[in-house]
Length: 312
Ligand SMILES: C[S@@+](CC[C@H](N)C(=O)[O-])C[C@H]1O[C@@H](n2cnc3c(N)ncnc32)[C@H](O)[C@@H]1O
Image (tube, rainbow, N blue to C red; front, side):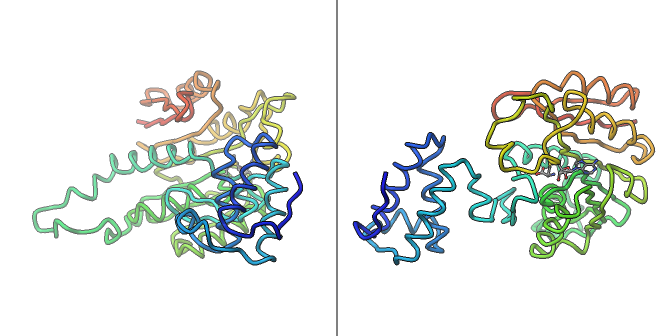
């Protein structure tokens, strides 16, 4: 389909053109994608775009939008095109140095927050002397409550934990990729949580300087066998963030093996894994932490997606 910007520059017409172009290309979410991209170029919220279809875009905006639609039609993730991804209500900057954080990883963060609440108590449960209306953001860090986010990528998990749970004293956020760590640190600085996060480069738990109360990890878990991942994921996202040896379980297996020396007594591990790896991860956790209470959580599609191991 030819794109003739002079034809109709109104937001409504541009949106309709973009949707049709993405439908033609087989995009799974053409309406959402076209509206996100047009709103991004116009620098307005999507709600405003939808509300004023008769307003007109400038020629240079239309040209930029057409370029983004062409890249999206090729399969480029929308988050790399806009440079932004919302995660747990936070605006993260992303580019091709990092994996685009996925909605299922929000479930992992929620499981970690629940584990912290179990350890430290619900912040809403205050003493009689306390102000019952106290906001969670007023809670003081518990200096000796330490967490680690292994394979931090964009910093999504570490930043969401720091922003949501002020009682965490420090989070060690580790990535083997210096490029990923630069993105993560920038996100942490922008969202004003880097004062409680140590950004560390290295292999799995090696750089973590002391035993911690909580280890959270979303490590690469896709099998390196051909056809194990969606073609557009493989085409655009960093391979070091996707593939694990050993049927995908290599990183998780090594992390669990290291964890007993880096987890305090009664510590908690929360690990994301591939849809068919639940039984194997449970077995690895049970062998490394005899007697641990292990639960397997499901993602929005109903697949096993993460494990929570509370150790003795
Ligand atoms: C699946 S991505 C997860 C990124 C982020 N935690 C998230 O949930 O969106 C995995 C990350 O682990 C990092 N990684 C791969 N191997 C690693 C290793 N041996 N040690 C530490 N990090 C590693 C990759 O660079 C990548 O950023």
